[in-house]
Length: 87
Image 1 (cartoon, rainbow, N blue to C red):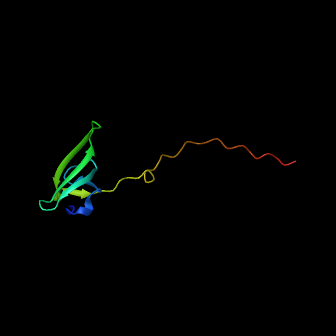
Image 2 (image 1 turned 30 degrees about the horizontal axis):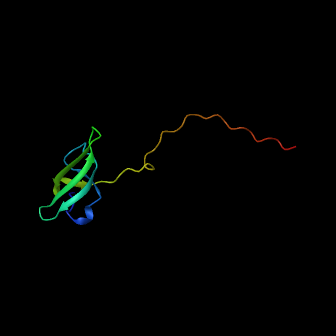
Image 3 (image 1 turned 45 degrees about the horizontal axis):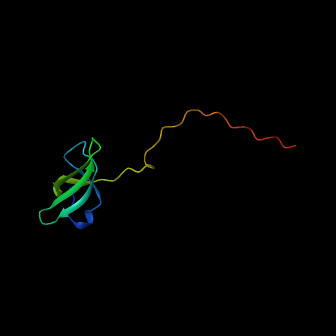
């Protein structure tokens, strides 16, 4: 499902729908007449990149938050100290 080239899309995350390993890109600017979207992202070389894509080639995506990433279970922990006996 492609995105619509409207001003409300600026700042949203998009990916190229035809690429399996497309980076998440942030929409920077939109040309509503030609339906072209300018997006920015960080490449594999850790450098800033910018490109212009037709709106029909892009899909919205959501960022994965740190809370949604599951951490592996911890190993067996030693039991804590027993409370001191009352005198």
